[in-house]
Image (cartoon, rainbow, N blue to C red):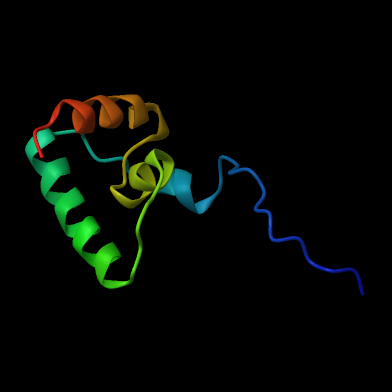
Length: 77
């Protein structure tokens, strides 16, 4: 029996990700969600992530990734 690949197939129009409704990128909401995400991740021992993962975790559309990036870069710590 051939070994299974751990690579995931690209998301198709009928995939789980495309069935979710993307959230609006409202700065106060996104930053609050990010704080929650960060706290949960730190409790699990996570030390870093990617903008792609953040986009997915915050239920944002992939096309909003650059907006999220700019928001995080311009936000005070």
